[in-house]
Length: 324
Image 1 (spheres, rainbow, N blue to C red):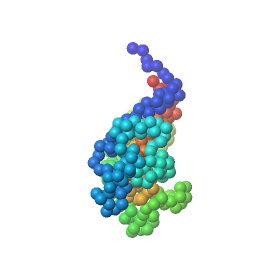
Image 2 (cartoon, rainbow, N blue to C red):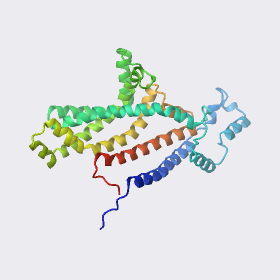
Image 3 (cartoon, one colour):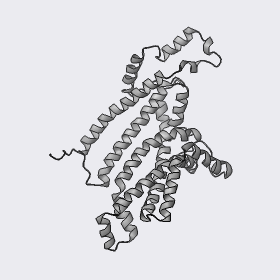
Image 4 (cartoon, rainbow, N blue to C red):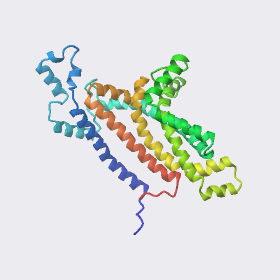
């Protein structure tokens, strides 16, 4: 059989972006019908406390018509998809503000938290994995494996509460909640605990992957040749072995970006971080259909773009990589 045809990076990127449209459309469709078929009426959330069942049918119908909820479900869906293609994610039922504007206002906080957690995962997980691989079956290897298993097993909400209890309430080193100004010392102090809460579990996953990948690479002929040339063990591990083990590590970090985005919902709720995750929780509790759909679609779009960026990074890390 003939070899697969190589295609330019630009063509590959365009094809991936085109397929991403259908991925996001599938996410939008799933979230739309899940929210509308779930029990409860968002109009009840708009009525003043205590009114509920005493509200007149005319008032309820006016509110439903105002938010387009009086139309058949398929009509609402087609209208929403048409507006979404024009980057109009609708009007929030809870705040009566454009969802697109709300998402654009809040997403920098969530991206900041996610990237910080990813940095924590890389800075902690990669060195631990390398140490475990270099000292295979030693005390260091056993300790790092135990720490990795503990990190994976510990729930986000429990770790967050423990960090808050120790570093905010007992020691008073860090603020318990909120977000400081980015790129300032106050902003960094607010960021440490939420980023650690999200990043610890991912760092454990990265450490285990790095260990297994490094063990395979250290057996390769080019590593033995580098050692035979008399290179320092540190250079052999970092410059030769770790460099050739980067592709699977980058892949996992790209996939974990999406996991961290979803995990930000919990961390933002615990630490009152003003981002998309906290906004999404409030929208779900209030049956705010447009807000939930807009936040989820944006998160899905970010996940797709990050994974595309990871695929394009392969060629930069390893020139032998070609796109088929």
